[in-house]
Length: 462
Picture 1 (cartoon, helix red, strand yellow):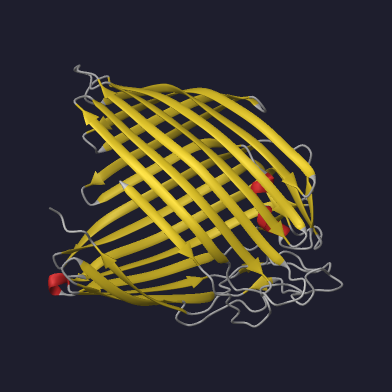
Picture 2 (tube, rainbow, N blue to C red):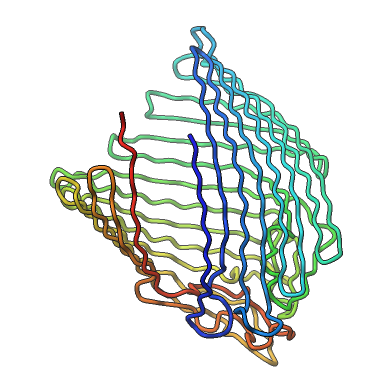
């Protein structure tokens, strides 16, 4: 398989007339090549990918000494998955996954520069066997290697980490009614030493129409704060990185319930889920302590995130489907000893999407409505408040009409039909070189209504 994507956005859009582009101009070449080889008990999948992208934004051309944002990225990637099935009664198999990538970035944010290069190598060997009809065991070993070479302005930040590990996973399956999956792995980081990660997943089908799932597990993550927060350079804030940043560590728990309810020969699907993450150590961007600084620090205990989601979907009439969902997010972190709501995070999101396809599948009509809840902004300067402490809820509507022909189709649609945009998204937009300039306070759409049309052509099968 060969997939290719090439684009070149040339126009500079400034609907709010603040002198800054509402969205970046993008030049991109993206090529992906996939191979699959099958023979008897052996399987091989190979993926190759190349990405070259240049994103340019900032002040409009023609302005004297414009504030410019230019992000150039190149990525080379390969992935290979080998699988061998043994001819025995235990349905044993052996798999080997190997991948590697090289990611290069050159960024300009006004007068600030950031360059970064990441090299990653990954290998994972998995052996799986059936102990009996109800019991399965998977075990194996893995190795992950990351090399970072970064420069912020003229300051170098280099980091290398190799992490070998072993793991085992046991599965108990009683006729798909009760499924228990218990796993554990031990890894050794060349930077942080030995760490242990257990996990447990449960599924219980109380009836054909009702399933209950639960999960619990621990996770670790190595932060790479420059690459993850480079967007914060699009402001006048001073970037301060703590010297003692540790590996992130958290426990996660969740429960999901799914019900299938017959209604007039159709089926209503209801699903509810709740997840809780308790951070033992979290790396955060502190935007509150000083409106002119960003402090990248560790928070030890006290931070958590709760997520509750309810979803319902049904086919109302033949060809007409409706899905509604609502998610509540409660994410808090401790800043200066005070537990506070995470800034620039929506407290809730609601979604309603409906689709209707006419008989014989000649036409299709799609409509989506999204309600985004309000949230907290980072603390403004007490003596010179340039933004509000809160942002309000807002709605976005999208629609599309598609006409199908034998081997091709045409479509027309609109995104953000109501033309809603965030007011004054850039702080002190008239003075990009000043101490109050900040283009990172984004919580809503910055570009308005978009109307598009297109054509799809499917090659006929022979």
